[in-house]
Length: 406
Image 1 (spheres, rainbow, N blue to C red):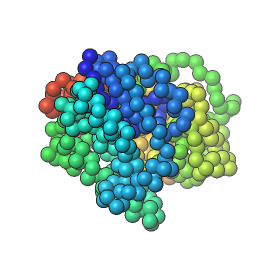
Image 2: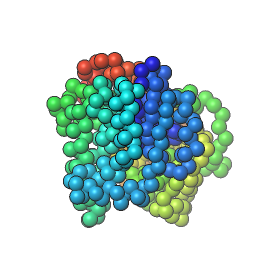
Image 3: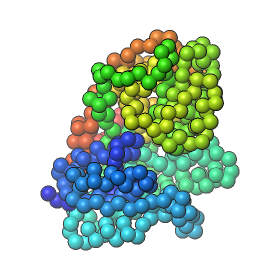
Image 4: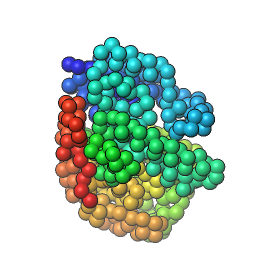
């Protein structure tokens, strides 16, 4: 097998959060066809233990520590260089030398960069280079700018502009650029029209056998309690913002009509702003749990009240796979191939969100259409197979990766 350089901004294991889920499945798929040389950063000390778990999929593994606090200080160089702060945040001479050495020696012929930040390390000499940008992150920074006070608003707006410039450059330079949804791909195509033919969609998947409502799961809720569940990494600002808004502005109205409702926030490393929400009646913060499925299986309703979002929310896909009623904001639902009112329920604003959640609590039932949607559109094996032509000489993105029609 020929060698492939796989570069990721975060170790692709364990597949327990959005970016790791996608990168791990992509890595595993490509390892069946290529000798993978993996280079990635480790920004959580707990993740060092998983190095050996990657060995079965890789010919070699190069993991480098990334201390978020130091990286933030290093990123300030971007103000002097005029570039996006994201680039010096991840810049690492050792990784650059390692990647360049593999290319010069002929050990690798192909390259896949996972996230736009890793594009800076991909040797230009490789005959075939694919960028899985996943999301147009620059737009997320612009959303941040609209919600934060000065001077953060200025910093975030600058980052959005500068990172958008880098994303366009990367899309032009790579042989193919993949996004997680039609909306994301269409946005990048508008910004980089000369690279339009090289920009396509590789949709996420869900392990529908793992996230199956057919299994028996222990009930984590007290008898008579109606669980309103949110899942996600709780040190991630858009998730923190979402649960704070819901707990403070929406859930009190829900409790007025449904006093047995319990808003359960399930996710690792909850920020202090999340922990203080437990002072409110009916709000529970679990922290990290070994298995989110019991919370989803016994939820009366799953909510995704994100106000800042890009790409596709795996939390929504997983809840749909479990045939749960999902109430999502337009931002959380963007990019998901599902029918509102059938596969999930759309709500916007405090009053509408509260009414929609209450309606779900009053008619608790499985949503079979939601799982059917996942089985139809979000199968990992089928979606991953569509990317193989990109490493086999295709000059444009294949039909399966073209942007979905409006």
